Structure formats: C-alpha cells, structure tokens
Length: 327
Image 1 (cartoon, rainbow, N blue to C red):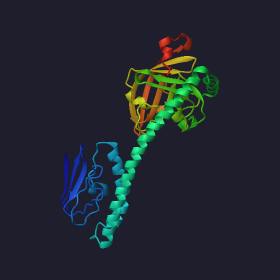
Image 2 (cartoon, rainbow, N blue to C red):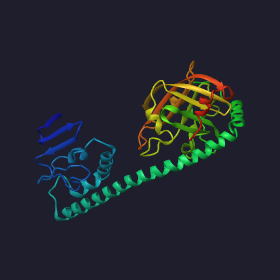
Image 3 (tube, rainbow, N blue to C red):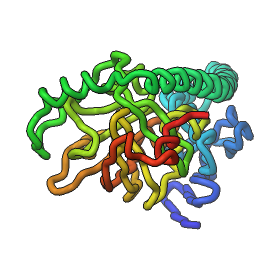
C-alpha cells in the first residue's frame, strides 16, 4: 500500500495492487451515481470539490481484478467531461445542477446495464462464432485432402517472390488479399490446433484459418508468418490455442506435398506497431504465428519457432500424416 498526502488540499491518495486507486478529501463532493455497482465503490461527502484533480482517480476506486472492471472504468471515463460540466466543481451545487446530478446517475446506471448486456452478448456471439468456424474449418480441411490448391499458387508466388531483404519496408510486400485460396494446413498436436492455411491477411481470411502475411513467402524458407483471430471468450478456436504453446513443442505445416516441422522457441507480447516480427532474419529459418493477446485486441501474442526439417508426404509415417487429420 502506497500513500501520498497532498496537505494543501487535504487530499489523500491510496494505491493498492489488489484494490486499485482511491482518492478521498474532506472538502470533496464525490458523486454516488455508480455506488456499489460492479464493485466500483464511490465515496460521498457534503462539500463541493475545491480542486480539479484527475477526475477518474478523484471520484472512484477502480478494482483491478479482471477485464469486466476495466469496462466499468472505461465507462466512467467517457462521462468525465459531462460530469464536470453538470456539477461545476468549483461552486456550490444549484437546484438545477442537482437535477442534472440525478439525470447523470440514471444515465450512468443505464449505460452500465447496456455494458453488462454487451459483455454477455459478446460471450454468446463468441461461442456461436467458434462453432461456425469449427464447421467451416472441417469442410475446408476435407477439401484440402482431396485436392492440392496450393501447388499452382505456390509456383506463382515463387516466381514473384522478392529477394531476401530483412529491412525492406513492410508495405512493399504485405499480402492483404481476402480471396479464399488455401495453401495447406498447420497443426500443433500438443495444444489441439489444426487449421487450414489461407493466402493473405484479409479480414475474412483471419476467420477462415491461419493467414499468410507476405507475398511470396514459402514454407521452410526465411520467416513464414501467419495470423488468425482470437475468438472472444474461446481459447480453442483459431489461434486461441497459441496461449498454451511452450518452448520445445512441435509445429507442423503441410502443403499436401511435403511436411515442414518446426520447434517452438519462445512466446512474447508486442505492440501492434511491431511489424518487424514479419521480417526475414539472416541465417535463420523461422515460423512466426501471432494473434491478439486479449479480447480487446490491444497487443499481439507472438509465437516463434525454428525450422527443423522437411519431408515428403509420401515418406512420412502414418502417425505424421495423421497429424493433419481432424476428428
């Protein structure tokens, strides 16, 4: 527990990792319109606030236990300007302002209820989306077994592939196509991940399977990056299982002609701006997989693996071939 006394206004700040930030003052009016809702507690006194301190901290205790409380915090922050305008913090509260106070309490409660409903709907939609993706993936994997759509596409990419330039600007080779073109499959048996590989990181492709990122990227060469969505509330669909990957786990790619085996090296989280994770690294043959690290999509979880070996599908053991089968 850290404590800081601001004697000139008799304001006391208490910060705790367990309970969040609490700011109290003998001279402050702490509005109670969100009192005891969603475990956001509000202190209340009789006198108007004499100093415009940081609004969100001055008026609330924000618990830091889970993402649901974070949504409550965001909700409160959206009301910051309206609350300060309605209650004129450097003056006594007039009858008109008291009426506004009541209105804003009601509005805050209504918005919070809407937020709760949105979270519930989000969870329901996430479950529905995961089932839909699973059904579509099953159909796609069956199609991939029967034909080899990757061969002509691979040949076309190989002819147009750029020379290895680790520091080339990402805009010059990003493949953002959204056409439903399948190149093969990816499997990580230890975490039950088994998805089709689709060409290009268009929005729909990120829901179809593991989407390639660069024009001309080839399995078993350079850095082979792929991305897929994280379904809210579901850690088993698309790239959700990446959160369970640990160093040493085997990752398998297939283009229906060959199997490419990688060994997981590390997992880490980066900002969305870190596009350098897609670049080739001189002297290394890599696989880079990434997805949103949270449902909010603020950062990216990255899993990188080192290339181990390549073998023809016809030379693979029945166990190795079965890795790409979906039950």
